[in-house]
Image (cartoon, rainbow, N blue to C red):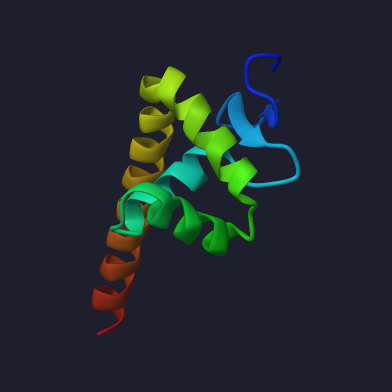
Length: 98
C-alpha cells in the first residue's frame, strides 16, 4: 500500500483484491478505461465519470495495473466469464419459458 497510495486490499468470497479507498475495485476501473474505447487522458476522464472518481483515483488504479497487470487482467477475465455464464443461463431459462 505504500507503493500505491489510495489502493487498499479487500477480502471476499472470491479472494483478495485491490481496490480504491472508498471506491470500486481496481479491475473495475481498468475495465471502464478499456470499455470507453478511448485512449490517454480521454479514457481516464471517461472512467472517472463512470465511477464518479477523481483523476488522482483513476491514475492510482492505472499505476497499480501497470505493476500488477496479470492480477487485474485475471479479475477482468473472471468477471467477463461469470457474466457470460449468467447470460447463458438466463437465455436457457427464457427458452424454457417460450
